[in-house]
Length: 347
Image 1 (cartoon, one colour):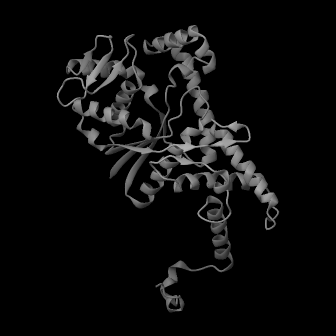
Image 2 (tube, rainbow, N blue to C red):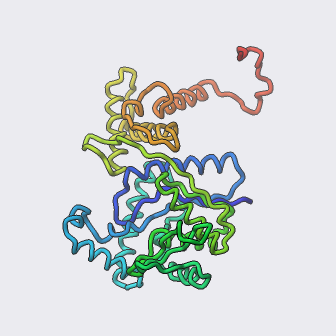
Image 3 (cartoon, rainbow, N blue to C red):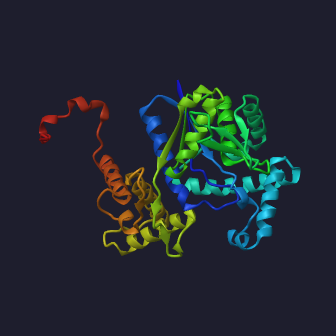
């Protein structure tokens, strides 16, 4: 059976779930549903949990911007992590466990579930092996600035290259991504691996696949990047929003207000739960119908419209169909006896 590993969502450890990760989560979930229903594939879902870089140590970015000592302390903490310092690793594991548990709550609200929670940050221990392999193959070059790079140019003149090692000896995002790809291939033996991220990372994944090919891993031909555009203008009553939890809460609040104001609304046992379900589906459908590559402007009024191609209308239609099926059950096993001649012809 053809096997696929899908990596999407990509939140960062020790950071709240940013609203910017919503599109990656939804698009990845849509790919999952389509492949499971329409194709004969063995699918493994992997949420790509990023390290978060300096954010793990820095509690408030603004403080770091105005205090150089915080940036230096963060860089030192990162260096200790790469050297497998026990105290640093212990703290990082605590951050990871707390973060993943919080993310699971958000994913549950979205109706999204993953088989694996991993990412480039989980493969730091293997970056040294990757760098040794690159050195042994003569692929890792040292620049005048002391950085380690891989030449990706066709002429071998470093006109195009990827940096894998900083001047202080620490690894970069792409270094850990190479290690992650190698580890996933070994563990899951996939035929195809799909990365779902925004279009700004297109060059990153192009370089990642080139590095894997240069190392002799021709299975990299089966690695695919699915890029998408950004959502512009997403906000809540609190102002310009950065947290996905705020967006989900806003969808529930606005939907609840619409339900209370609508004259046709019926009394419900749990109106907040209904508002949550309809509001979240409205967000998902709005994102699904938006252009994939182009950026698009987010509009709450359009998202929660009761008519048209919206999640609200989709839920309404589904409820009507379920009600019709209950009141007028159709035996699907005997559809051959249906008098289709009574149906109007389609021109």
